[in-house]
Image (cartoon, rainbow over the protein chains, first blue to last red):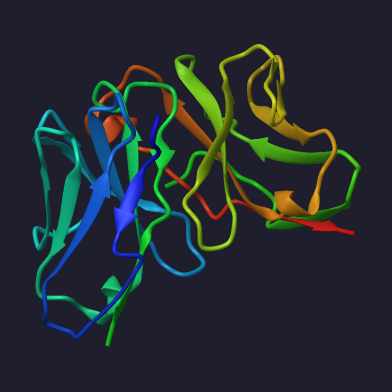
Length: 114
Length: 114
């Protein structure tokens, strides 16, 4: 059984650019949730993808978007990057639209916007 | 906003039990108590969850008070590798989408000293 993986590990972008982050879910899981963690804060829910569709969204603007593929891997896209988007981006894998007990997190992608 | 309150930090000696408290006075009848931990710059790791009975697994024990308004996570023999931020979260099981999100507070920083 493979765990949750994310790529890239680190990324540096310039304000105004666009970025794509990737997540491979744990084997057998069909749901991916994305979280943003600013320095010194707990992770904040961005959105969830279930069966290739967005299945719930937190308080993030539309320039945060995503995709889920038939193999349940997922992408997070952020357009028009702002300095405040600098954070650790985490994806969490689960089953059944998130209703399972546990969500398993990947190691995260550290995004720095300059 | 997080539905739980935790002390900011605590420490304990290696080999001793670490007892991490959490208050969740507004918990609903269908909400479970979850504990996750996050070692520096890694993704959160699921530890344990419970509804009203005490629970134990290979990592920890969870003691929930009879009125369910508070709980304690117990690491029976803390090691240096247990140094991390520990998050106490309440969430209803079976919810999907945005309702299944994990709402993290700032957690409690546990420092295990040699």
